[in-house]
Length: 379
Image (tube, rainbow, N blue to C red; front, side, top):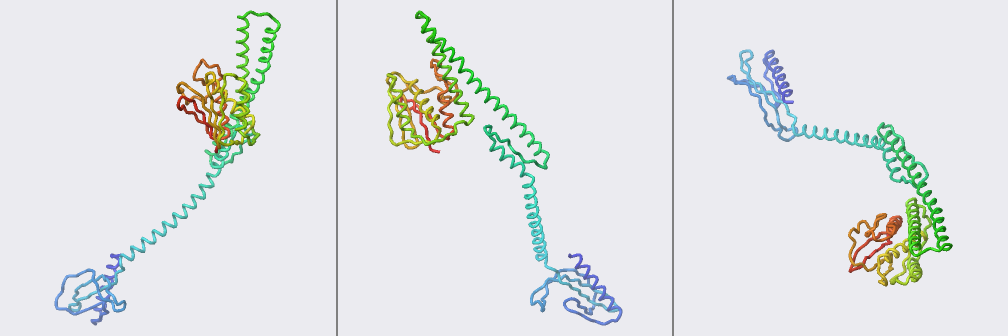
């Protein structure tokens, strides 16, 4: 801009000089052009100056070219000025223009890219939601959206293959477990019947009777193991769908009455408030039965086993000489703290599985020489 201004000044000065050279008339147009006769020639001066502008009633910045010329044997002082555009105004205009352009471009690209990305990523997120709701127990096939993106399309194909294979493997394993469980019942019943016939129809000595009795105990243990594995499988397969509101306090009282036949058991039930729970009746019965059986199994003769029911909570405790070495493994399948115990190791695993199924919170603590199991039924 400064170069253009100076070029304009030189051009104006040349025209003034040409006019003076041709007609020898002295003229001025302050503050733009001023021509004066002088006695001496001085060097050319190019500078900025501030001059009062009456039309604007303010001081304005001018670029000034002052030259001295000898024309027709006379000396002239030629002054040419032009108004300078203020750089701050230009700078602000440029900054504002660029910011406006950048903002408009950013907004446009943002919405353009957002819309485009949403369209491109929509099949991916739809398929992700389908994967979150995928369940092995559902019979309906998983439906996935196709995509224009090659990677997403290949991912969809792999997910379809994976889910179909997992579901087929699950169905095969489920069928195998059910078949094995069913087939085990018949030979166990036959073996039990044959042993009963041997005891009833043949005279056996004490040693033989002891061996046969041991076999019967093993058969009963196998039956119990088979029943519990079947229960775990059914819980995993979500086959207990009959939900009812159960009075757990009354159910505990019924269980205590049935266990009173065992002379070595001392069960005490303290009910602070009726406890109602929504769950399957069969699983509720198994939950209480397994907790009581576990407490009885690990208690000595006539030691008190206490059950406390309150609002949304059940606490059962039995005496224990020392804390468990590995309490974190207590609810694992087939885990037994002591190998001397002849339990199947599935009772507490079933209790934990039932609690997980309904969202109940079960915990274990060793407090004041007592093993304490607590179930919080609030969700």
